[in-house]
Length: 246
Image (cartoon, one colour):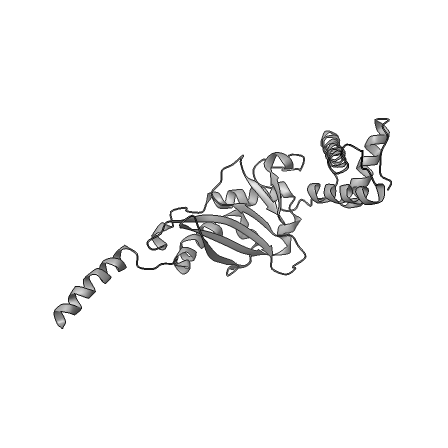
C-alpha cells in the first residue's frame, strides 16, 4: 500500500511543480501587477488605492487573457480624451507582461485595461489594449474606438502626459487649433450625411439631421448644440448650402 501511494504521489508532485492549476492565479497576478499600476500616472486617480484594481480572465485561442479593471474618482474625467489615452498608454507600459508562471499548464497574457467611474454609472468607461505600443494605441470609449490620430486636435500641454487640471470643455487658446477642430467636425458631418443618405438622394431632414449631429457629438466629445453650431457656421463662411438649423 505504501508503495502505491508513493507511485501516485510522484506524478502529482511533478504536476504541482510544473503548474497543476487549470486556471490563472489571479491573486498572484494582482500582487505582481498592482505595484506597476501604483507607480503609474493612473494611480493619481484610483478611488481607493490598489483596492480599486481587480483582475479577471477569459480563455481565448487556448490561452488565457487577463483583463484589468480599475475604479477611478471624478477627477479622471476632467482630462480630455488625448490625455486619457496618454494616461492609459503610460500605465500599460509599466505593466509586466511575463505572467505565464501564474497560469498553470496554459500560457496567458494581458488583455485590456478598463477604467470605470467609482461613483457614477453615467460616466463612460474607457479601455485600452495592454499589449500595445506608443503611436498605435486604440482608445475605446463606451464601445467607440479612437486612434491617436483622431485625437490630435485636443490639447496635450506636456506632449506626453496630460495636464490633470485641463478640462476638455474649456476654450482653445490657439486659433489654429480652433480652425483645425472645426474643419474636422464639419468634414465628419458632411461625410456622415453622404453615408446615411446615399450622397443626398435619400435625405430626410427630420430623421437624418439628428443622427448626424448626435454622431458628431459622440465622435468629438462635444455637445450636440456645439456640433450644429460648428457645422452651420462653417457652411455659411464657405458660402455653401447646409442642411441643419440650430
